[in-house]
Image: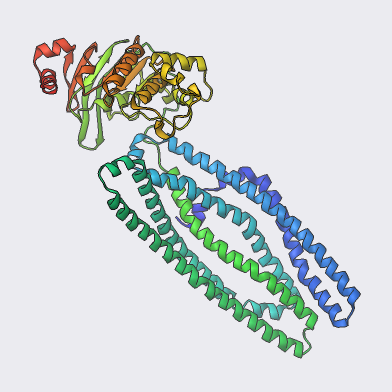
Length: 575
């Protein structure tokens, strides 16, 4: 992906800000016009100095001050409007990328690195914003100066102008060569930073395990190696930059030396006046800054190209699961669920579910039991439509879930996961998660059903108490009851309980179990459990093995049958 095609992707995000860019461009024109006037004004100052006319010198210096003032006003407007336009463009890009990430399915997140995504959403997009601002602000102004000032120089003395630019093709070739190499090294450097960010996210997010296994020294060593790779990549980039500036600067110095030699020769032959030479040299001096800026901006452009590539690599990833164009809203469900010949595999030739058929009546409580890897969690993940089966279909009230919108489907299914996840914010915000506005009375009702109202009221700020990152201010049982309240706030007709009490002590489990019994009333419930003590009251227990239902019945019936469930039960309660 070359730089032209890379930056082409940014056009849809830049066009809506055309008014701000236009204002900035108008200021750029004013700034450049004032800049071109300065050499002529300085030349007149030199002329009056040569005559010893103090009044003339003062008059032209006053005019120079006015030109500088007007130039500064234009520079301010250019800076403010181009910065506002670039920030608005970056904001639109960041929102678009984040929205796209939300559309990607779980398959993508099972492979992606959280730290890498975080780096792309922050550092990479910020770098793109910086280069947009620089291109609109400094590069546009510098490019126009590189046209206007040489035009004035050519008008003043074309032989001297041609001599000044004799080394320009070599400089342009070198800058391009350095820039292409800079783009390659910058991509490697940003990949190393991304890897470092991923490692930090992984380790700090699991610091309890690190300490439990006394693995601090191991992680310090691993971090040190990754940081060293990051250092080496940055050093290669900066070495290239360190070579470029002296080389280009030396060529600029050679051009100035040639200018003075030829200028002195022309003055000696009467082809150029000292005043004209002063004006010409002033123009050259004003030209050096935009040349340096364009060189720097070209390097920045090539460096940011890697960020643009990394961002639009994300945008080009197609969601593996999408709604149909004519998807309809799922009407209020009774809770009847049918799996009809469902087969699913995460990887080719490794089936998880095989031609599974299951019918759950509205209001029925079904427990899913079996060894790890039997397909229990996969079965409910397909109901939530986190994945689509390779064959077969799932129906709610005889409506294929592929034919309805994901929002309407998931609003009618509540889930209480084994690993309770709470977000930073208040308890009320966590119970009403996903809702832009919420009804406090409904939140309190849900909390009461979930056995959470009493402990919430004991906090100084009640429902406005902050739970801290990942809910660490609450105990495991408290977090689980908040999760139950969150699951039932929308009054879903289907409820999924995924090992909801497995990690709790006896007292907390009793409170949560009582809450679950209230929460599951008049709902179709799927209970995933390894601890068989939690599934005895289920209307039906399904024993899954190798992706198939091998036994079905109530707790008493399956024990009396003496099959796989009875054997599983006997091993669990052998003590």
